[in-house]
Length: 122
Image (cartoon, rainbow, N blue to C red; front, side, top):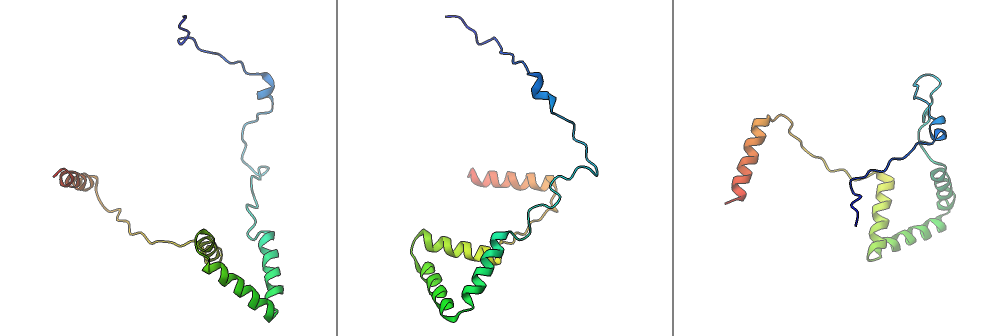
């Protein structure tokens, strides 16, 4: 059995693969993603319009509210996902404030780490 593990395979680069490459030139002609993601997608607009139309009728509004209430009361994943998505879409993601103390020296951090290590080993 021959040992070919020391051999390396070389690949050749086809000239056409490099033909269309051009260096990046930032400037006035470069637009990138100038507009960015649309601030309010068309699906949101259409949904809001539909809800405004349907919910302006008191009978339809009550039917819609009952349907949402039924979804909220469902057990398991459906009810939980509905509630999570409904609140997230209307009020944004839930945030948790975090207090971070960045005024600590490396020496203090090392000392605290050593203390924690000693306490764990007891």
